[in-house]
Length: 500
Image (cartoon, rainbow, N blue to C red; front, side, top):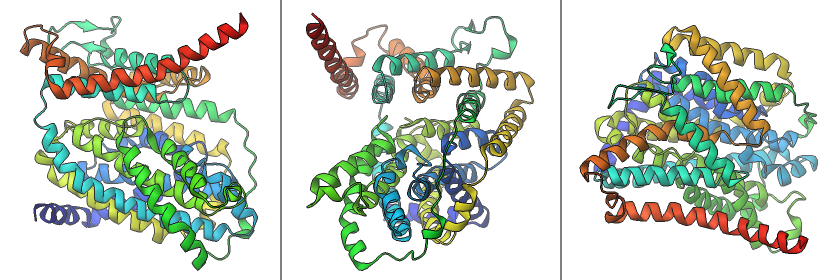
């Protein structure tokens, strides 16, 4: 009964004319961003983050969330028609989706991707509504030690599960935490890591770091990339899948939704892992695995459902625990902080209209995605022909305008340029920037809860293991590190033996 009352409140907020407009704008822009290879929701949200400062918190979060899950949908269009994933999570869709397009079956591939996306999105949103409140109620009982261990575990998970070296991931998270601690210490009043610069007395603004690290650096990197696109425009004819297509797809859609829903809750796993895991499962369960890679519709239905389900369930730890499960979720938490809302379980109790309005808007947004996008396939194909040399200067201009309007400070643009250069260096060194932004956001929170736990326990470190929940979180973090380190050590040992 209480859930029905909350959902009634949420739909009342989401169905207001302005919030419907924000939701429509978000999913439309998200799909457009998902279609364009090389842009992505991370860059877009980083650019638009300062522009949401003047919006009400509900409208800002509804629009930014729409961009996020709309991009997960739009990435499949590019993967199927151009063999270029608009999003990394749609990379596996290229394998069979593009082959279907080459066989003249782009329409059914796009339709199944849309059907799987909306089913997964609705089920994922339902999980937020059911799982969110009890999880938030448990989190309200957490003390400083539990919060420290939980955030530490989330940071370790995000660092350990990124692509590439474990050492690089941990190093990026540590660097992000150091930058997050810059400014005036609230306890002692002493400046830290400011190097005598007055502009850093309050630390680096989250908007500046996000826009520089993602928007600026991506522009520089992608300007040097030459993409050859073979757009199969003439083959998009019949969008209705056959009865055989639907029969072959409904089980992969449900399995992909289950995989994506579970992996989306775990920090650091992400949509990409969910889509590849779904593809691997479908190939293993198939009666004829040789069909995969040659246009198997199951290879589209499962991964697309998995990445959209993960996109929705990413909101569960973000909204209920205040723990971002990805870099994009960290930006959404930053949006809450811009509006003066402290992320965490108290959001559901102190701002119920925000939480439930966002949940209700996700159902509305997923329905909008299907109604909007299948008829607009021709429009998205036309956008694929837009040269990058026209697109990126506009992104740069909007980024600079948005950064300046937050504090009316030209130094913020200079700081953003610095983080853009830093992000470019990170990308060239094959270092994922996601752990950096998570460390930047979680670092100050980890420090604050560590200090609070130390004060409560009079400096006794046993407080972190005497609490069962805190001990479990730390054990998970330690176990994950061991699981990542042991294979590396064994591999190096085998190489040394072979060379010897």
